[in-house]
Image 1 (cartoon, helix red, strand yellow):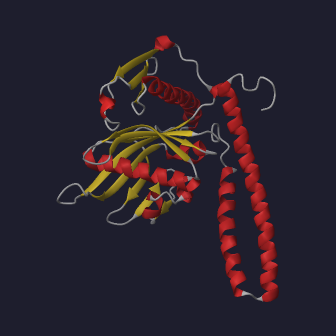
Image 2: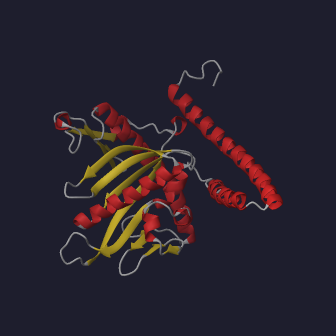
Image 3: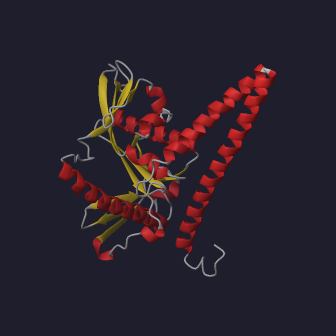
Amino acid sequence: MAIPGFWNDQKVAKDLAKKLSSLKNQVDLWEKLETEVQEIQQMAVLAKEEGDKAVERDLEKKLSDLREQCERVRVTTFLGETYDDHDAIVSIHAGAGGLDAQDWAEMLQRMYLRFCEKRGFKINFLDQNRNPEGGIKSATFEVGGDYAYGYLRSEAGVHRLIRLSPFNPAHTRETSFALVEVLPVLEQQEDLDLDPKELKIETKTASGHGGQSVNTTYSAVRITHLPSGLTVSIQNERSQTQNKEQALKILKAKLKKLEEEKRIQEKLKLRGEFKSAEWGNQIRSYTLHPYKLVKDHRSDFETSDAEAVLEGFCDSLRLR
């Protein structure tokens, strides 16, 4: 970073500095684990020599904490796919079903926010379309942190909820759906060059929260990539320029992932294993009535601790 001319291209330099910081964090973590193992070994010797119950209790707690940290490090060794070490963009879309579906979309949003909070990831909301009566129609947020995309990419797909509806007097058993999209945030050297002629850019007045001025300026931006038909809408920022930048970032990430998916689809088709990730194929079901069960339909892994999953505390399910 001290090399002359390193900061001439600010975006590339920032990407490299971020990657260096991530590598440094990993080295620091391994060194911290090594130190903690040495401390535990010393405590074990002391506990054996003195038979001190207080030391034994401290030792058990330190061992438990160490196991949890080691499990996190072990998991990262499996995150070796393309873009796994990148930041992520998560989008949640409520399916048909009115308030039930929109409430379910907000429950998923809360689940991911809790998961990210637990991991120390940073959240930056890019767009959110709330229903004044409750729930969200859609939301998009960026997740920053080491291996954010790797941890979250398996969440992409349709999530199904089965429960007693809190939104009708009869409290009937209802099934709701929400679609989750997960994209990697591209670094400068991986960026795509888009032909402006292939983009349709529309502006409109923003709606929702943001104060009086949110409805008086044409800050909301909608960009359509004409060849693919992909569309991105952003209205979170007051500035039209900022919203356009965010929309282009998401569009490029979608196009990049589309390229990757096409390559994977060709391989799976040859093996007869390809399934669409659209609304027709749910990846996970969350049953809250008449019993509690969360089941991942790809791995067949299941757990009855639905509350833990919805609180973002079930890595064994999320990382399979």
